[in-house]
Image (cartoon, rainbow, N blue to C red; front, side, top):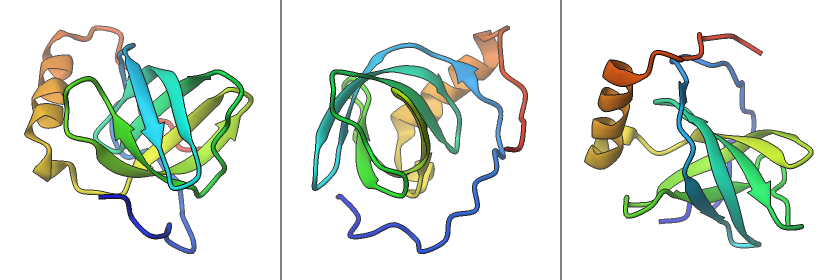
Length: 118
């Protein structure tokens, strides 16, 4: 499932509402396997605080594993110390569990983070 390479130019702009959601996750690329804690999630991607010493690089393509969900392919769009943002490059329409989770969070999450462009 892992994509071969990231798009050459990535224009990063948040397009959807982020929901606070903290669960353990695993990020895997051809280079490294990372363990972390999700900070928030949206239709476009996730924010992850990494555990351990390994780090991902900007524009690195990786698979995001959330619990028992099917992994979803993404690309690192920003990093800051131990935190990184991953934008999904695979359509979430093929991930019914993720769609259901986001719908649930939309209905129940009173602490949604508003869309802010970087």
